[in-house]
Image (cartoon, rainbow, N blue to C red; front, side, top):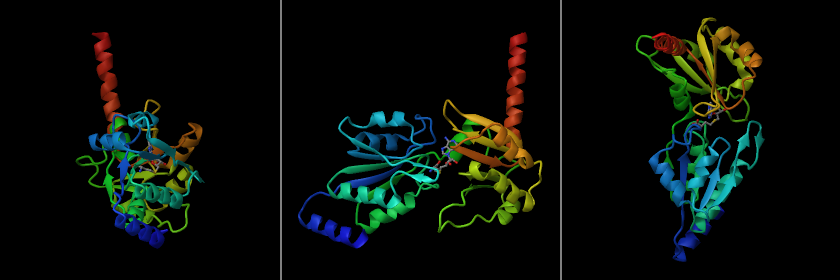
Length: 273
Ligand code: SAH
């Protein structure tokens, strides 16, 4: 793609035509209200909208009626449009003068391949920008009342992938993470939960470390399961945990239980008053 398209772009510029531009935009974690003002403006301006599976469809209503919308979603293990083809579409339409908005779930630069897309645009000489979004870890932590850091409990937090598929994927150093980081948030991990929990336990995490699975965080269908690290995989199976879901491992999960208890006590008091 690179060299040929770059030549095309130079010819295009020489012809005096205005090239379009590409906005790589984070749509937020699921709740359509959790998108930034800037991202929403780009949605309204887009001529072509390339959107992912985890983008809330209600956001598409903000596009102009004449905007072309193309679904580029990838279900785990199943790719509708290969990444190279998505990037080629972005280049092709930007070259024809369009404002292309590449709308991605959460934040484009957190397990979102936004970096690859930016590189592809840069190589093709296309003007692009990256607009951040609330990544699902932050959205789900807030709606699940699980602080990611908490004074006296957690001074560090890491976002890691639980997915081991895909060639060229760097391996997560579970052995080092288990001892070094207080709160772990695992993306794309529910399918591999038994193996992941095994890694953590073998690396020295205490079996009774509290953990949570947050399914469809920030949406009306949000579900949160909590349990001990050594029982999390069984819990996930019995409760049929499904994607999209995040796994949070760390003492911070106890803060959620404390908040829920306080809330329940308050409800009791108000109902008996
Ligand atoms: N760029 C995205 C992540 C894409 S990877 C972001 O910043 O959030 C896809 C993974 O994100 C899913 O497998 C799941 O682990 C997580 N995810 C995305 N949306 C989610 C949601 N609403 N609730 C829980 N997990 C979610």
